[in-house]
Length: 147
Image 1 (spheres, rainbow, N blue to C red):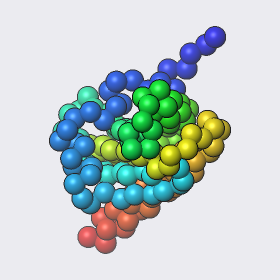
Image 2 (cartoon, helix red, strand yellow; image 1 turned 180 degrees about the horizontal axis):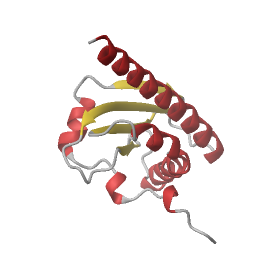
Image 3 (cartoon, rainbow, N blue to C red; image 1 turned 90 degrees about the vertical axis):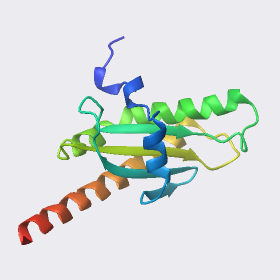
Image 4 (cartoon, rainbow, N blue to C red; image 1 turned 60 degrees about the horizontal axis):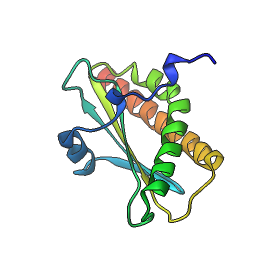
């Protein structure tokens, strides 16, 4: 079985720093929903040059799933879906030098969903996110050209 190094989701890509998480949920972030997931994202300045261009947080509430086994299953589904579809997002972020994208995926339903559905919803969310980033890039270019 061959391993593709681009389809990993390592520790550096996990959003763990409390200051970055507070910045993401503190206000100014944008959100999109594709049931059963909600995606919250924010473009910030990189504080560390070694930091990856995209960092991700995955949240599944204890309110929806009392048993850790079910929460872990949902988190695993979200991780797998993101891991297989993150390449387009990373190539889009290469144009933003010195910027970092913070993304949080929040589960919003009490029911377990099949992995195929989670994957299709992840595709939909990431496509919308890439379109949003490209739109922000074009607005930045237009502002710079008008100056």
